[in-house]
Length: 338
Image 1 (spheres, rainbow, N blue to C red):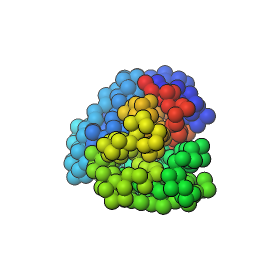
Image 2 (tube, helix red, strand yellow; image 1 turned 45 degrees about the vertical axis):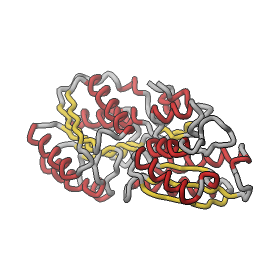
Image 3 (cartoon, rainbow, N blue to C red; image 1 turned 180 degrees about the vertical axis):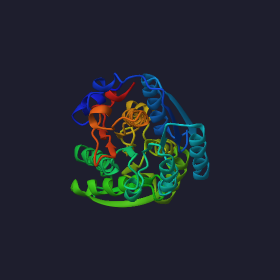
Image 4 (cartoon, helix red, strand yellow; image 1 turned 90 degrees about the vertical axis):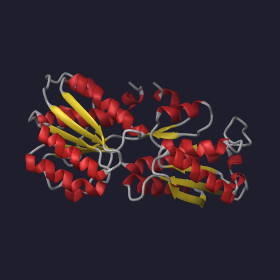
């Protein structure tokens, strides 16, 4: 387990204090929006590990980024007799029908990673959300760029005192895309820099799409004019790096380097940092999100009270379990490598 979990102890109670649950026979059905998402793969692995500790049964299905398929999967879990549901919605705006399916059966439902609207969360007494505040990750990723520019004056290639940057946004309408974009740019402004957006586009969390979009930006504005790249997740950041490497950048020559920052602290991103290809990222704690989701589902399925004491995590407004972000830089990235 990452050393970083210890650092988060002020916000996340010690897991060991709540590890000794009585064995459960709960069957929990989980839907993940798509299995080939690197971050959600980490969440899935953590969910499985936690359920193994709990002794119950966890089934996880791939919704293949199709909301109608996910709706059918929830119906199937209900028909099968699942005792609780964990859902990573394909479309956060479609959470209400899923909540209504669970409510009609009196089943606990835990949404993860994609936050339903407040009115959905307030419409049922057996609903919870486990995730992280996207604005934190935006602020932290923007601050990584600020710190770099302040310590590396040569990063301002044209010496105009401004940061000319590319923004790779994740998914149209996704709250994380909106907030990470907004707060990262605001952090650069708050850091004392004027900023100039040379290009911005959606790449749907995907490395290949991000590579293609980045190649387009390079062709449009010239690689020598790009001073920074911010991406809403690590896969897109790594895609941007592939496009930069094709131009001879980020391969070890300090004169040909564009700082790139992502979000999630995935293993591939940490590896890229170890090679000097990527400036930084922000830990989106997949382990604790997976652990917390299963703990809530099991306790609720067994008829217990979901409290801070019973799950080992702080709860806001009785329904929200927020897992903190943490900036990952060249100074501390080794702490997060497994």
